[in-house]
Amino acid sequence: MATYTTNGGIKKIATGDESGTWGTSTNTNFDILDRLTNGVGAITLTGTTHTLTTTDGTLSDGMFKVLVLGGSPSGTNTITVAPNDAQKLYFIKNGSGQDAVISQGSGANVTVGNGDSAIVYCDGAGASAAVADISSDFGALKASNNLSDLASAVTALTNLGLTATAAEINYNDITTLGTVQASKTVTANSSGNVNWPDNEKAQFGDGSDLQIYHDSSTSNSFIDEQGTGNLIIRGTQLQLKNSSGGDMADFTANGAAQLYYSAVAKLATTSTGVDITGTAVTDGVTVDGTLDIEEVFELVSTGTSTTGTVTFNIVSQGIQYYTANQTANRTINFTNVNSSLAIGQSVTGAVLMTQGSTAYYLNAYQVDGSTITPKWSGGSAPTEGNASGIDSYSFTIIKTADATFTVLASQTQFA
Image (tube, rainbow, N blue to C red; front, side, top):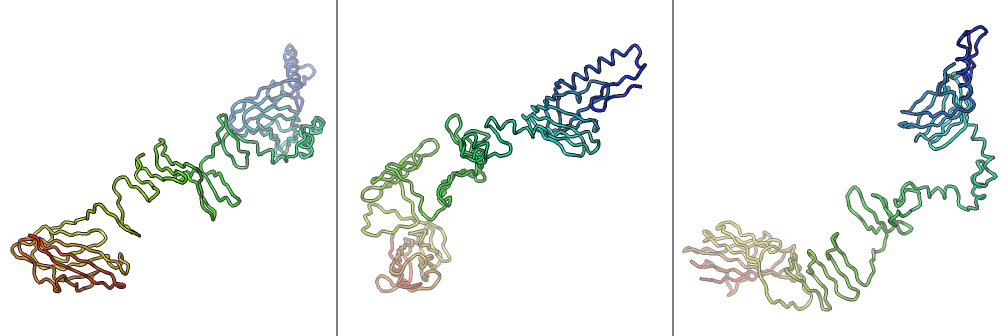
């Protein structure tokens, strides 16, 4: 009865066996020997596992001396050498696109990186079989060419005439030209551009005081001064433009500054002050000097109410005009006075009351809800309105102390 060699699976034909077929078995044995000594096998890997089998008496992938790994594995591929009691010596070239782990039993494994080559020895120790990379001991053979010294990376760099460390040289191990990467050298792409990805900052100053970056969470771009000083932009002619190139602001050294609305200049500084094109809308104006006004337009609030308290907000109106005939005497309350006026300031407002055949008048007066007695033009307060006309009341409120006011009032008939 035939038996087989332990490591190669070569058939050992017993005396008197295979009468008439001995030649076939012998030729198969020669082919196996050819694989064991010089055979190069292309091993196609898929998924993450592969079994490299040596089958007794049959040509099989495990018999090749040189293994060229290819295919399309989905990740690191573990190649199990079977059977686990056969000693093997493989020359492996890995071009599969993934790392390959060579294993035979529960002992040590060898990883052949993608693009690398190795000589591995499988000890065939059964369930506890181990794999060793014997080519890892061949570094001394390369030292003489001054390109590497596996015992000392420092010596290898010195042999090449380099003063940089391996870690410093690895800063150049970038994956994408022109894109900033952590702990890597900054490079430009083929167009000479450097890209800072979202949230990557160009930082200046020992304390990262000035930062330029794009924030992906807000979709905003920032020039951010984080230090204790000022952000200063210098130039003889500074311009701010929108994304289409339209003017937004223009600043000239020792000259005018202009602000634009829809690329049209609206505010410009001059040697004597400012020039505004269009209408200026402001919540308040403080003039420290002579006020020269060509035209003044006061806001008139109209209403039809004929009863109740007249609320006059000195901040939002100057004249209150009631167009409907009044039907009762009324109270007027001036609001936002104490909070708006400084001591020594005054404000003037007017109330126009339309009267029918029966006239009514303002007979009670308040400032911020507190009753006050005005001082009337002519020396006495009115006791009635004027029928079939418009009564115009004028009030000038002077703040003399906190929540303390002098009110000057007058009533004029218009018919």
